[in-house]
Length: 169
Image (cartoon, rainbow, N blue to C red):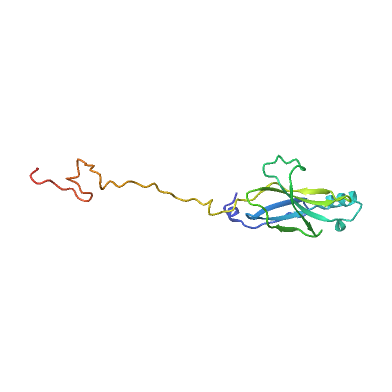
């Protein structure tokens, strides 16, 4: 690996690949980019006896936090209709500190969702609140000024100087 590769900040999006990718934007927003390859578009359109551009497309966001997700058992949090030529979308207003899966889907004549492509799990971070911030607490230390604790060296050393007692040599 070349050292210059470590600092390469270019970003290339693969076209012609069926994918849904969710990226965390902030604790309540996911940026989603998606695409469907020509073969899958053709198969989906043929299955529904329609043209791809005529199919209603939706981004379906599922909350999979604490769920062994099998594709059907997570609550649908949001269903957003997107144009057939859209390639990306921001999904705002999600609950922080949760795990989400995003489907690009269409609907059957009966209104049931039909998933075309699914993302991996996207985990939103928790929000930073006043109660979640760390606070340093110090334990009070009792004062020893009033106590009669005597140290054997206190007549010779005052904390700054070493003093010899008069008459001792």
